[in-house]
Amino acid sequence: MNGSESSDASVLREIEERVRARLAAVEQSNERLRGRTRLLGLGLLLTVALLALVAVAPNSLAVVGLGAGLEVTEAQVFRLVDGNGLQRGEWSVDEDGRARLTLLDQLERERLNVSVLASGSPGISLVNSGGNRRAVFGLLPDETVNLLFADDDGVPRVQMGMTPQAGSHILLADENGAIRLGMVLDAAGLGSVILPDSASGTTEAPD
Image (cartoon, rainbow, N blue to C red; front, side, top):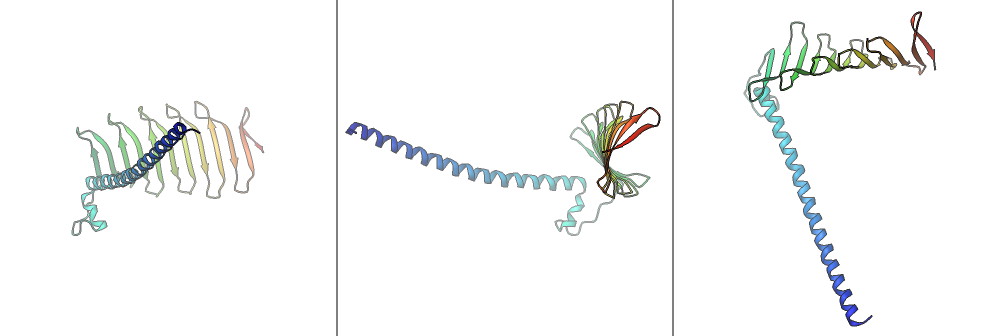
């Protein structure tokens, strides 16, 4: 290697070292920035949560010791409105003792319901723009858990559930809501398939 090549190699090594040092500095700076961003995001989330709590129930801060001396606010209905005065939600207890949280879209159409019946059974439903429930998830009084999917017209088409005894099932229905196919697995692990039958409506074929 002559002197010129040695000099060129030395220059390249120096450039590489400078680039590596610069990349390391940039990476450290990015890591510090990510840390600050995470802290900022957490602080923003906590701030939004506190603002929402104050907007819905100002006196509820007394529960966490941030508003000592404030009285508890009680009501049967809380209404949520946007900046234009349009109703966007309601939190209420009806005459039947059902506690219900309803959220509306910008056209004041019901889109999400969270409710607890007087019997204590909770449920969640998703509503389309036409007012039909497309998905329902609920816990029945007998401790059966059900997940139901409906088509755009609100006709139940798919149902999945589990009984308190750990049995499970999946039912598929046609456009009229009639069950056409079902799969059942009991608590003992015995499975069966439910198929339509011209005489009785369904037959069971063990797996």
